[in-house]
Amino acid sequence: MDNRPIIKRIKSGIPGFDELIQGGFPENTTILVSGSTGTGKTTFGAQFVYMGAKEYGEPGVFVTLEERAKDLRREAKSFGWDFEKYEKEGLIAIVDGVSSTVGLPSEERFALEDRFNVDNFLRYVYKVVKQINAKRLVIDSVPSLAFRLEEEKKIREVLLKLNTILLEMGVTTILTTEAPDPAAGRISRYGMEEYISRGVVILDLQEKNIELKRYLLIRKMRETKHSMRKYPFEITDHGIVVYPSGEIY
Image (cartoon, rainbow, N blue to C red; front, side, top):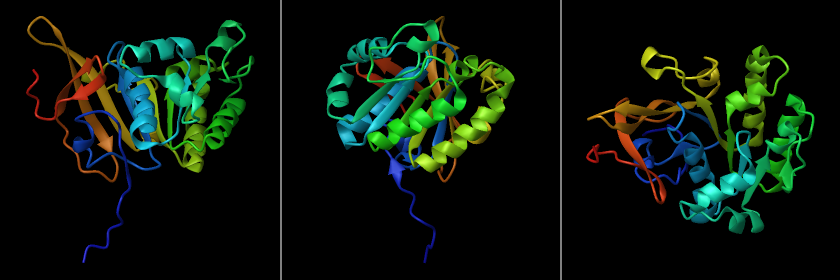
């Protein structure tokens, strides 16, 4: 008899991806999505939250530290995603982490305070997660979070604290970060984001036939059998689509 526990999976909402990770992300785990500029990290996170609400009725929180909430909503509409609909239904909460940093008042229901403080940030995100009973959380991005610190070297301490809080929240989380040089083995901006995450997904751009192509690699996924090969993906009119067979290219 197989006595191994059954791992509950959280669907990513990304066509073609879940079959690579035994049906979805392990529940209540932290996943790092890393890649260079233009690889689709924000889109990956937004699709995870939006499809969670639309397809599975799972509330989600998106913390945007790189662009205004209204810009995120506008870009989402280009994929046919109506964030506002699910915000009104209490299934999605977007936390504006940008306005305060540029000295502008926020028009958003959920917004970080004027004076950034890590403990207040974690406390506020925890509050929003509990308020809508979120099952999914995206923080976009780790470098933007570190940029707001008085001393960037404190990012190690912050990430360890963040990981502890995320475990207490009981949410499945995506953290986005930059990959300075994946080819040289540098898969995260600070070199430690991957160690606090139980899963690592790398998004990459590679030149093929004088054209840049998108590829995805699952570098790590605890409690999951997965391949270590690269899979092609596209950002289509409906969001990200992964091609497990590799036939698209």
